[in-house]
Structure formats: C-alpha cells, structure tokens
Length: 501
Image 1 (cartoon, one colour):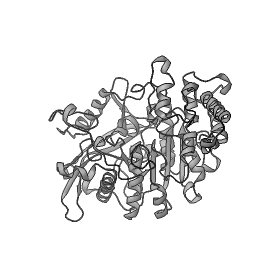
Image 2 (image 1 turned 30 degrees about the vertical axis):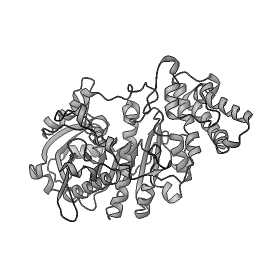
Image 3 (image 1 turned 90 degrees about the vertical axis):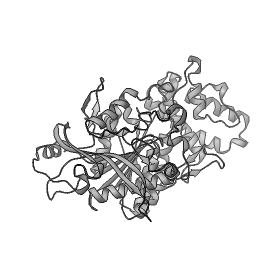
Image 4 (image 1 turned 60 degrees about the vertical axis):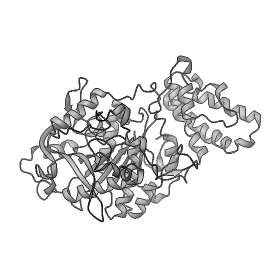
C-alpha cells in the first residue's frame, strides 16, 4: 500500500499545498526549496522549509525567542485529504529535533562515506515532517539573555514547543490536519507535556510517539520495588550477550528473558517487599539467584538491600576486563557503541546550510561549537542549567529519581481519541521493557486500549541506531500513523502481550 500511495504522489504533476502563506519563498525568513527522493520504490517530490518561528508573549506580543525548524512536505492534489503532520522533539534536554532527521526518519540519510542518499526508512510517504529545535538547541535562541530562564526549564520549554506547534499549524495546515508528536529520551517527556498542553488549548493531538522515554502515566501503577525487579530481564539479556550467564539459565536470548521475568515476578518482588524482615537464609538465596540471572558478582551484592543499581551493574559486570558498560546501550563500553560521529554531525548541518539553503552564521547548538566566547570555558548547554519543575520526585530533596507525571492519561481524558505509540530498547539501561509492559497491563481499559507498545530486543536507547531495529521501528510507526494492525510476530496488543513484548 505504501508503494501505490507513493506512486500516486510521485506522478502528480499539478498539485497544491495545504496551508500556504507561510510556505511562500522568502516570507518570514523561511527558505523554501524543491527536492525529490525515491522512497519505498516511488519518486516523491517534496518541499523543504528551513527557518524560524517567533515565540511571543501572549499579553504583549513581544518577541521572547526564535525557534528553528526544518520541514519536509509532500504536495497533495486539490481537494484531497490533508496529510498528517508529525513534529519531532529532541532529547537531552540539550539536543535539537534535527537528530531524528538524517539518522532516523527524514527523506535523506548518509552512507558509510557520509554521502547523502535516499532514506528507505523515511516516514515521508505517510506524513509531512517538522523537526523542531527547542530554544537553546540548534539554531534556536532566546531573544535576550535574560529570557533564558523562561525556556531552560521543563515547563517553560514545553510551553514554548506547544506554542510552536500552535503557530506553525495555524499558518501551514487546517484544523482537520492530523497531528502527531514524536520525541526520544527527554524528547518523549516533551511530547507528553505538549500533548497535554495542546489538548487543554483545544488543539487535540492524534498520536503521541514516545521513544526511549517511558509511557508517561505517572507513578501509581508500579512500586519502586517492582521497577527494580523488572530491570533483571534486561540485565540478564546483557549478561547473556557478554557470555556471563551459566548455560542452565537459558540457551537463547528469549529463554533467558522469560526465565528472568518469571523469577522477578514470583520471587524477587515479594522478597524486596519484605526485605527488612527477610530471614538470613532466604536473603542469601535471593542474592545467589540475582547473581545467577544477572551475571553480577555474588560478593558485590548488598545483602541488606538486595538491589543492584544501574551504575553498579554497568560498572561491575565486566570489571575483570577493565570495561565499564554504557547506560544507553549495555552491549557496548561506555562512550563507545552509541557514540554519535562528530563528522556526521557536521554533515547534517552542512546539508541544512547547503541543500536546504539556511546558511546561518550561528553555531548549531548540540552539533557544533562556537568560538565567542570560547565554548569549552564559557558556554554551558541549556541542559546543564535546567530547571526540573515538572515530573514526580520520588526522593524528596533530590533530582536523582524524577519520574513522569501522567501526561498521556490526562490528555486521553480530554481527548479519548488520542493514541500513543511507545518504543523502548531492551539494552537501554535508562529504560525498562518489563516494567513498561507491566504498567500497561495495570492501566485502566480506557487508556490501555489506546496504547501500542513495543520492546525492541536488539535496540538500545537510540533504537534506530541498530539497522534491523531501525527498519522495524519505522514500519511500526508507519502502521501506527496509518491505523493499521501491527505485525503479530513483532508486536501485540496489550490484552495478549508476551512477557517482554
């Protein structure tokens, strides 16, 4: 179906654009160019836009900041239904939305020699794409330095992104145009907050796509002990990957995960719930089982808490080899496997300057460094000056364990048609496949029926950083946007979900 739809888009010679004034060449400093790409076997003509949207104070209309974006839009025939628009938010919070472009879902990506090629995993065949840089990232800046505090906190950042969507959509689309929001890592939190805010503004979101940032339902569905216990399956898979499990645990990744999940549910959670009164013999039994399933040295397990922190696990699993594993992909050493190439960063920004025509003299924050003042000594990224004024703090007096508010359920209460797609990687220490799946099993039906969830068994924090999972993730998101059933071999509805899917 994608191919036939693409052929139609590719052969259209006379087309109109949905939402037109802001798309005129040169207007409001937006650079517009025409391009083509062969995607899913069809040639697509598309228009790129690169420029700023002003963020203004509501009461006075004074300019508070300028938010940069790049948009990719396919023309539609006169009278045809409007194509969906998907807005992309970066994580960090110091990362721009552009990171999802060439590395994931834009019409162009790079080959091994950093030459631009058509991206076979692009979402452009099913939705227009708008990559948004939050203030303090990319080419986005506050208008004055004293305005930084308005944007460099969770609430102000989300409100400015909601304002971007309101303004861009009003100038480029119609009330009937479907709206999707996509974010990864902290960008998923941005999606959750903005989804709620837009719903409260009367601009419902059709779909929230949350990657590597959790399911955003708050804290009432799982205890801290359950969250701890449900880390064991991904730790077991990591230990299996590195050859640190006894063969009797399981001979395959799936068998290891199933055994670890069953033990975590039946033995580990009850033990943690009564850890203060657990008899010594039972305490030792749990410690030995925890070591067996995770590969973690038995001698290093604290018999009082019976817990293994993420830092301890990644630091100790391969300590005898002098290797500390990375949080975001526990298959690789820290700062290795998931590291992004500075050369690729430069190539991405070069494409924006040369091919999209936005040749700004500004440093593209998050991908480039500037020299006035010296970045290394004087410039502090927005994320390092961040105010965490949204979220639920489970440890009073510290920001060490901040969890999401129930942003998506609140938005679903306002807009029962809202759907959410959630993706997370098995080897991402910052996420928790089994815990997310357990939460979805406990959600009220009015919420769970609108969720589609997937644990990517060969994925890390950047799910699309693994080629096989990049392909699967793109296909799953296409199915979600097109309201198609997910592949039964790779994704299941909440009512029939396997232990880790």
